[in-house]
Length: 341
Image (tube, rainbow, N blue to C red; front, side, top):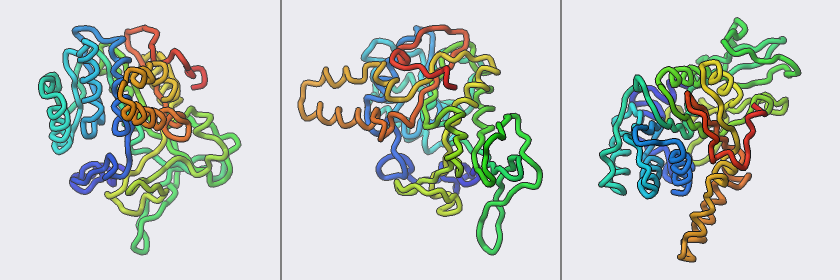
């Protein structure tokens, strides 16, 4: 998964192909509507002060950064700096072009980083970042979980079970799993959470991604796990097709993330679905403020995509973590499911 996604030049995220948007393989919330970024900006405003910054991971083509900076400028709450951690030179240029085209007067507050800062203070944003981190795939066999590796036989790739039982740092309950039950575990995402805590002096972390709590993640009916591939907006579960040309992703086990975050020292400030998070932040206000009828209809359609259960509203979740900052966040006024983690 790591090679297929991140191998230099040939990896899915390292190639020159357009991967996000209608011309790519999947559409993210910022691509659907500016109102996603505007709402996120409102949450940032609640905790930002004149000396704090924003750090965005996985900024893609720069659309979300543009939305957040635009709205924070309108709200007179610009951060001292808007950092984007980006390793791809191509994406850096794309992000710069996107931001400077819309906000030429504000592009100077953006600074690109190639590694985590030493002592960050402010808001960390990671929208659809955790799901893109390479995961391990496990299979339940003879009362224990074994890792599924990849073998190459007869001219093709195929799954192959490791000889020794999986012995990762995460304890997976082994009750009621059927023989052959498959699931995923993302050790890289858990290590990233720990690194994030070390890099921060204080602040807020907002994780937005599709996923669920542990009970739902390991549900008996989810016997094939959550591994999905996307190519030209079509989903499949075969990572051995279109290698380097399709996205490979797994859903986020937010209980694992929350547990590791607490172990590292973070405090959980809220967990809910995307719909309730955006409604709590008043996404419908933008609709009421729009005078143009045609634009209002367009915005209403966009909001539906973001909040309807059949679209992104239920499957996407928001998890907020904090370090040395206790505040009742506006985004969780309507719903807080922290107790279900």
